[in-house]
Image (cartoon, rainbow over all chains, first blue to last red; front, top):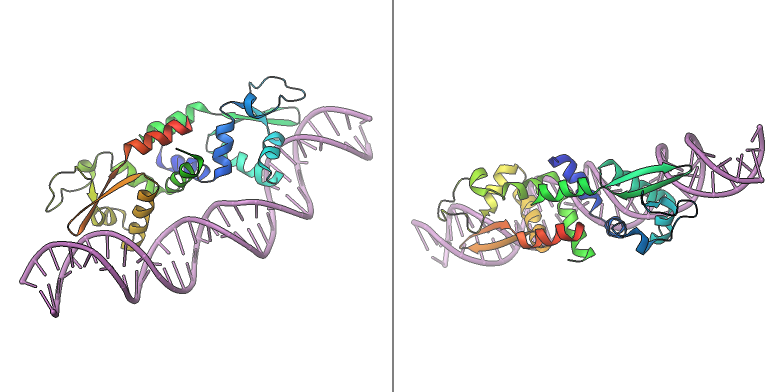
Length: 100
Length: 100
DNA sequence: CAAATATATCTATAATTCGCGATATATAAA
DNA sequence: TTTATATATCGCGAATTATAGATATATTTG
C-alpha cells in the first residue's frame, strides 16, 4: 500500500452509496437475493442487483464499481453476461494497516 | 461509527496531502522539529510546522486541519497562540473496524 | 494600548466529481 | 444471424471540492 493507492481508496470511501455497497458485501446473502443462475455468493453479487438496491442509474453504478475495482477494493468475476463483485479483504486490510 | 461520519473521514482520506499529514503524525518527532516553547509532542504539532512542510497556503492547511478535526481524525489543543494537532487513534480504529 | 504572530474564516475562481442519458460492447438466447 | 440482456464507456451540465488571497480573530509581546 502506498499514498497514491490509499487516496484512490479514500475517494471511493468518500461517498455514502459506495461505502454502503462495501458494507452490504460483507454479508451479501443478507442483503441480496440469490442469483437466478449462480445460487451461491462465492464471487459476490451481480451489478444489476447492486444497481437496483441503490436506485441509482446503471451507468453511475457501473462507474462506481469499476473505480472500486481499479483501486483494489472489489474483485470482479465474469460469469457469462454477468459481472459479480465481492470485497477484496486483502487490500482492505492493507489499507487499514497503512492508516493505523 | 456510522455511514455519514465514515464518509466524512473518507473525504479527508481522498487527498494525498491530508493522508500524508496523518502519516507524519504517527511519528511527529521524526518529521517535525520540536516546538520553540513546547518541547514535547504530547499534543502533536502546530499548524505552522505542518503548513511549512506541505508548502500549501496557510488558509488551505487551516481548512484541511479544521475538517480533519471535525470528522474526528485529529485532536486539536490550543496552547497560547498555537494550535497543536495529533491523531485521534480512537476514531481511526473505529473507522477501520467499521470498514472491516 | 499598539504591534506582531498564529490561526480561522470569508469570498471567489479553478478544478474535480456527480450522476445521468445516450451509445457501445459483450454475451446469451431465439 | 437477429434479438435481448448485462455491463461498460462517452459526453455533458450540475454540484462539490480545491486552493488561495484578503480579512478577521485571538493571543502574546513590547
